Length: 396
Image (cartoon, rainbow, N blue to C red; front, side, top):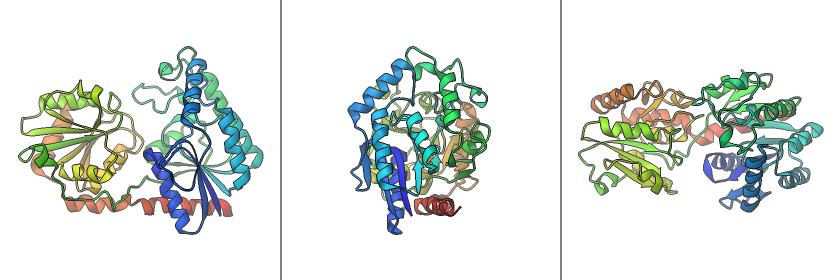
């Protein structure tokens, strides 16, 4: 068995880490495998770069100008196809391919011509829309029939709304493939079944995390920040803004009693300028062990995301023994159950505040309950489901 994964990154970011995790598991089983990626890597030895940062930026600029997101990057696509021709994989596993990595027309024409066996993990909704990766906040369901007059066009194109044409191109290109779709959450699987891809088999394989890193651990975080007598609420994101609910934390800081303190991780100078004095800001950290210590120190992890597929941060917090309170949006509430957290209706800040106080006062979720739940998040178990899927596909 020979497997090639294709993703925007290799070992960097959530999808890049998933790709490397799968690759390491395959290598441990003696299976030849590679990761083709665009331009960002942690130096993983089985990674094959088919682009570079300068090229990707140029393709992004062209996409913004002409509005043809997903149909540039022809030079990089030729390199990808050349590598596929050289390796001759039994299965090609696609992850995120919308980082201006490839030309869909060229790539999927190649897949059809060669009858390539495909697994495609959808980490968002981009594959079945004209432009967008998420549409919950936009309250748009045009993707069910035909994208047009895109309300989020400005995020993807400066001048032209080509959402209808791109939607139809994707619909045509993604027909007639030997394809199995994987989603990390039941929520996304249900959306796929309502899209033009509904004829393909869809499997749910939850994302996983490294339980050797994310576990309860010694932490002096409270002492460093003089929080020994405070109820510590934690939020973690590396893209703070409306989508991740930054405004909700700012509102909570006004509402909650003085013995509560909010800590936000993944901020920057721009975000700091929006925060009140009673929110502690921790800028981006690449040290996962340090992050595990912050999770461990918190009384409650609060996820105010308004759009998400299956947030890794929920799993990381629970694995560190900290319960999670989340908005009921996307796949986020699927991660919590009655033993490790709760959820409230999205944007109901009053309900969120009430649940925060209830959980921090009554302490209904123990560290043991959370870590027991975290056994479901073991990346080795989750990624093994991919190797089993590859084997089934090859023998079909």
